Length: 241
Image 1 (spheres, helix red, strand yellow):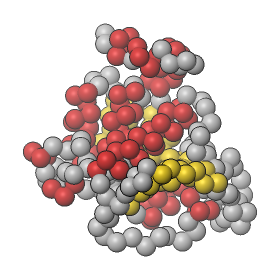
Image 2 (cartoon, helix red, strand yellow):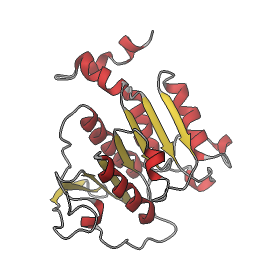
Image 3 (cartoon, one colour):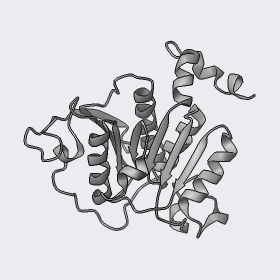
């Protein structure tokens, strides 16, 4: 058995112990997107010992992905991203159960896709699917870890009403995005790692640091700031909570 030695260094962290490791092993996460943010999120949660990882994406690996989506090697160009990612991740940790889902996330299927996940990680770049995830998270009463990148900037927050706002409180109308988003691979890697940290906090039973706050990271100047974000009392999605 590799487990006792595999997780020894994190088990030694104050307040962690075997109990926390067992909690992670019994947890399930739903990762929406196997791209720039999804890759570091999935990697960090896999190596941390999350027991069940569900990864959803509809795309295939393209050569333009390779500057940042490090779970996909050149030989997998043209392969479904979910298959490519889970193949690599399985080689890192055979004890994790992976479920690749090559489906478009919609309001009609999101509840079935997320299933019994304990937390949702939004690693997407389109708001239609994000809004579906937001509603699902509220209905299931689970946290939604939101990440976004643009150029040299990354943003992370945790939506978990009524303890804070939901996605629709902050973005009542979808932001317009151009088809090709400029981004450096190191930016997605660092931002996705922040998402993974917040997910682990939730799975450990801790209040995530970014619930009700948004971390804005300007990597070009290494300037990080945390903004307070509030619920919208008239939000059509979460005001009833």
